[in-house]
Picture 1 (tube, one colour):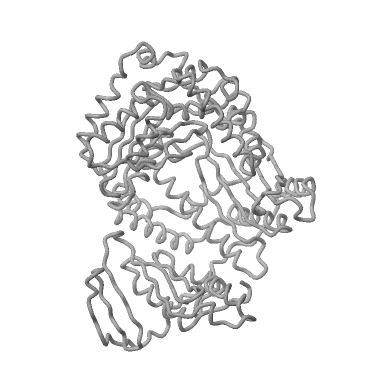
Picture 2 (cartoon, rainbow, N blue to C red; picture 1 turned 60 degrees about the vertical axis):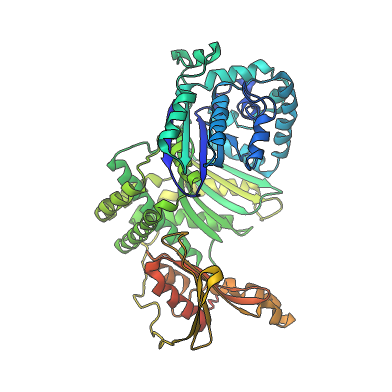
Length: 604
């Protein structure tokens, strides 16, 4: 068994404990479909030291919230249990480790509790039979193909859950809940030596007992199998129409092998890929700001969906009749990158932006939540993701980013070519659009087959290098100042009548937040102007500010950690936002511009 320990004081006096099991629904036999999830349920319904509902009762007694996915989850490749407990009570800490140990080695599968829990698991299945389940049933087959993942969804089959004998639950548990497939993750406000001693005492070696000793031995024939996802040459197209679909979307997927490298070269590849996605997303954003845009929003990303493959997604939200235009726009932008690559100015801008975001994470490294750190270590155990710590990351980014060339980024983008292992999903609400599902599929097939013959112009990185605020206003003065002792804050009155209340905190090292407001809001407008008042702030926020449209403003603020939003509420209006301490000057310039030079772009 492996273990990860990290002292962390955010939040104070709290400890986050996890039992991570490298076994999920993909390991089920045909007559076990749904039992990985069922086993997870049974872990809360009786162990050798905690009978029936005692674990649930205990967790609730110490203030933990208990419920679906709040204390455990089962996925294709893993089952994870977690506890968040007070850190200053040795008895609670000891009991929590007893619970983790029992989950790992001593779930009892009491016959009466098994029968009672069947109804709970079946009810979860019934509740899940909505849009999400139908989406998965349409999405998984083209993605996974003839793979074990297609037929091993975690929720399983109701007939198996309803009829599987208790012995099959025990079979799954004893087969896969083994030391070589489990890890303990402990992150929190504690003495790391104390935690390590507890882990060793509770988990190494396994508790006495014939079944546990058998599970401590890893036999060759019971090693955890790894299931792949078959490759395919031709693109797969799926048009999914559903009455509960929340929007119309085009999702273009490219399946790639996961990145498992642990060296500087792998880190560099990840940085190159991050830059490529940032540049493509900036182009998609810019195209979406044009008059009569082909989509409502678009983007791209890479994610680890299941262990065997990573998924690169290019997606667009479109109008109900906008599938064709949105899909064509995605293809055009991908072909533009493929044919002409990116530009040096784009790369320089995104390097600054990426380095700025990493620097912020580094400066706030002591304020990361224990639950987030715990997830990082769980991911490392499950998929061998690179986990070097933000201190090392910050140093490597400073070393690697200046050396990354445009040719490297363009070469990385070549992996986005839509040849093999490509899947297109079109999702839309029922009764929308003028084209049938068959017509949309045929259109998409034609577009994909002819994508390589599509000729597009190179991207032009238009950018007006002008200052954000051309005319700096004459400074006023503070006419009155007082201390508000009850909240340890300062109140300043400015010469223009504005009141400022300032309070220094240590919540985040790299963030200053503000809210500005005055009485009024929607309540003051005439009835005929009410709808305009409702949408005015969104329209202004999407139009840029001063002399800068939204695209120019986005480029101008690259690398700066700053945001300002105008708002009109029911009884007041004002501004809100945040900035890093280094970008406070930019923050105040933006506030000035929104107050004195708001912009309304007709194309918005």
